[in-house]
Amino acid sequence: MSAQVDTALQVLEKQLNRPLVVALEACARCGLCAEACHYYLAEPSIDHVPAARGEALRRAYRAEHDFLSRIFPQWTGAEKLNEESLAKLAEMAFSQCTLCRRCAFNCPMGVDTPLMMRAVRAMATASETAPELLVMLADAAIEKGKDPSFFRDMFVEQMADLEKELQTKMGDPAARITVEREGAKILYVPLAGEHTIMPPAIIFNAVKEDWTLSIFEAANYGVFLGDVARAKQIAARIIDEAKRLGVKEVVLAECGHAYASFRWEAPNWFGETFPFKVTSLIEKLDEYVSEGRLHLDPSANPELITYHDSCNMARTGGVIEEPRRVLKAIAHNFVEMTPNRHEAYCCGGGGGLVALPEYTERRLKAGKPKADQIRKTRANIVVAACENCRLQIGEISEQYGLGVEITALADLVVKAMRLPATRPEVEKLFAGDPATVSSN
Image (tube, rainbow, N blue to C red; front, side):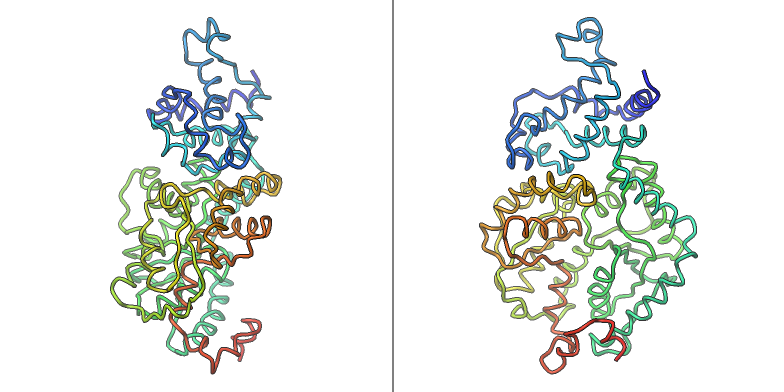
């Protein structure tokens, strides 16, 4: 046995808790999970049946843990793990499963195949057979947390420029973007890019929220790797920051995996109850709308709009009705995809796939069921509360000729606010480069 295979098996052993053992033992091979998988719907094949993916790991599991399999492996299908089968497992877990959990929700036995695929991802990461780009992105985030002072000053300077643009857009010289302000009620954690900072900043200022901005980003590539150690280090940056600032609530950008991992998994990783509440920006928008704190004009969004349920936000995170309540308050023409909510199809870009160019063709093919869903709605705009989903839907829109606009929910909320800069008399100021507007 090679050192690589031995490492992978050791990682599997460490993960064999009750939920994983049940997933490995309970499958009835009924095949009902097939129609639940967007890969299978896009390309019907035994390789795309979730039960078959689980069976690939079960063969190695039986070889190590089943007494009968050790004597008569040909009877049970047991197969000792080797370098070739480990490589096949790794590719399958990273390129043929987005960890969307739709199969688990539709399994009569409750078999959690994505849990098994996460175990395989952990095995692949430890044995250095995981996609190199995901490893690099996770390690870069960890390094950033070790010495934030290296980039903090530059970030603060950038936010000072963005604050000027914010004031112009709002027509309010008192509008502010503070960075890591101690004593603030809310710590907002964005994603990489100003497009995840400006709309929330507008909304927070409009409702007079006591908020401040994190210097870190919400994305956690350790989660995609199935590597809890890396995921903890990335999450710890934000946890430590929130504790140091004494905030009461951490609000995460519109990001599916960031919300699901930070809200539900992180407390288990650290074995503690955090001294602050964790919410999604979507939940915060719903709160502001429900309390009447935002002045909204739904006629600002006259197009036919549909909503994509991010797998991590909806199935895993439970944020389902909140975005719908907001949409009904900011738009006149909202239409549902079918199926939706817990049963919504994955867009095909989750699990880190949208970051892996080597799997682009496979990813876009797996996105066809979602493309068909969108086309049937005849919507002009697709709202997705997840950055990866927006990137993927943008690509499948081009691939399948949908011609739809993809946007975040916060962007439509801002549009419905009818800011001074979007009113006819001043909207011409913003027709060019935002940097030019900011300098005026």
